[in-house]
Structures are given as structure tokens and as C-alpha cells.
Length: 273
Image 1: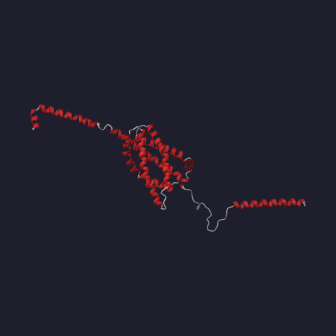
Image 2 (image 1 turned 90 degrees about the horizontal axis):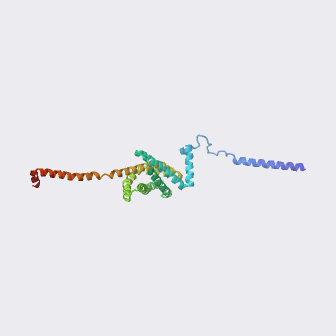
Image 3 (image 1 turned 30 degrees about the vertical axis):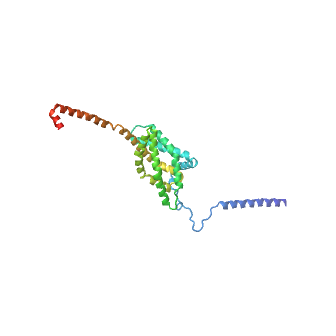
């Protein structure tokens, strides 16, 4: 009897163990396809987007997105410093002159100050003007960005360039007056399309990175335009010199005329008549 009881207990445990194994297999087994459901094959499995199949570039983009979500302000400042550094280097190479590290330092200061306000503006623009019509929302965002942000930012950029260079208030105002209208007109050829594409196709965490890639070329243009404004001011300074020479040359002509008249009395009489 004792042996029978022991055998029943062993068999009971064995049956319970087999029942548990069967339940686990049923839980993790693949369900058979239902009616109308396709069996996954290489032909019907959707491919990943192109930008997610770039290997190291994709991993770098994911790392940037993680940093953007974890430390957005630090990431924005670092991104702006990189953008403004390469933009100024490119602009100085286009100018054909020797490298000026002071201009690079000024650009880095300007970029670090504007990075967080620019990021805040992008967030505000993303969270507002969201209408039921997608086209209306996108068009409103583009127009507001172009009419409000672009003139303010360009005035800040050129004004700070002149201020950090040690120029007077009148020179700062003149620099803004000369450069901002030109840069605003040219920005209308580029940034409305960039803004529309960014708000349509680019996720929020990648918009700063996308705009930064475009901004390398744009900041190069702004730096180059600022360099031209600086050179134009230097050229205009000696301009009054020819007028002074003309004023000095006039008495010489009068004196020669007087000498000629004094040498010929008949010409004196004719001049008097």
C-alpha cells in the first residue's frame, strides 16, 4: 500500500508537469493564419524606410534623437555651435582672405545665444496653428515663421556681428538696414520649402537636425553677406577724399585764370563787359 501511494504521487506530479509544459507551448506557439490573413513572406513584408537602413548614419540619428529627448537644451546648444563653426569657416574660405579666429568666436557666441530661443520657437510653432485642414495649418506655420521669425533672427545675427566687432550704434543700425532686406528676400527662396517639408515629413526630434543641415549652407550665406557688408563699409570710408581734391583744384583754376587775365588787359575789359 505504501508503494502504491508513492507511485500515485509520482505519477500525479508527472502529469501536472506535462500539463504545464503543454500550456507553455500553447502560449508561445504561433497562431495559424486566419481566413484572409497573409503568411509573411519576403514579398509582402514591408521594408523599413530608407533613412532607417543607412547603417552608421541611422545609429547616429537614433543617438541624436535620444539625446534630444533626454537633454534638449544641451543638445541644441551643441548643435548650434557645430553649425555656426562650419558655416563661418566656409564663409571665410569663400572670402579668399586669411582665417580670422575672432570672426569664428563671434559666430559661436551668436549661435549659442540663439540656439534655445530658436528651439522654443520651433516647439511653439509645432503646438499652434493646428487646424482641421492640414494644408491650412502648414501654410499658416510657413507664413508665420517667415514673417515673424526670419526678420527678427536676421536682425539679431547682423546686429550682433557688428556689436561684437565693436562698432557704434549707428553702424549697427546701418548694418541691419543694408543686410536684412537682402537676406529676407533670399530666405523666401529657401526656408518656406524647408519649413513645409520639415513639418510634413520630419519627426519632432529630428527637425532641429534637419534644419541644422540646411542651416550650414544658409549660415554660410549670412556670414558671407556680413563679410561683404564689412568690406563695403571699409571701402566707403575713404570716399570723401576725391571731393576734397576737387575743392582744392578749383582755386588753382581760378588763380590761373586771374594770372591770364592780368597778363592780357584786353581780356580783363571783355570780362568786365
